[in-house]
Length: 223
Image (spheres, rainbow, N blue to C red):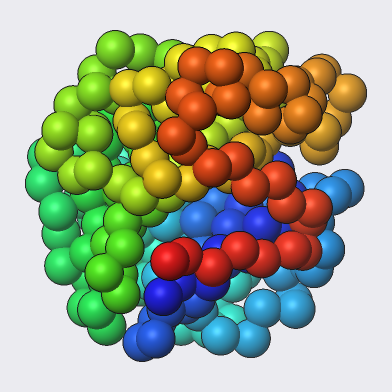
């Protein structure tokens, strides 16, 4: 079982039996974050989808406090201080990080300052979670389903920079997860997408997917 706590925007805390994983820990300047970086006392891995400030966020500060390893593409890792623990990887296959956690980088359609943006499939405690990071809708999400069959999709719905509610619902038809949790909305006014609209579109287009809407700070467990 994994406990997934939404920390606002695209930030998630994933609590496994043997590891704590953070993804895109944008906290200190996140008006929706229920905690700030200094509130995180334990972490094993910090996954960064790309180096925009609202995703790289507090990764360095958390890594220094906790000793966690930052997982990213080489270009992002290379720009981080050398004294940090880092796992450089790229898209291609599952990589064993240790402590019962394996991750695969998969494509995302977006931009970044260094290298390119990615999404992650995270495997631990018998569950695979797809964290989409920032992305538009693209047809090769069907390949992510074919290769990794994630049971949970953490998916952006805010629009403007990423998918809106309708596009995110179409993504569910390609990914076919069991559960979908919307993210990357409501942080700033430009991110207009509403989770209720996403839930309605998902009910229409992907009725077998259970949509779980969290408030920042709330958690869901799977299975």
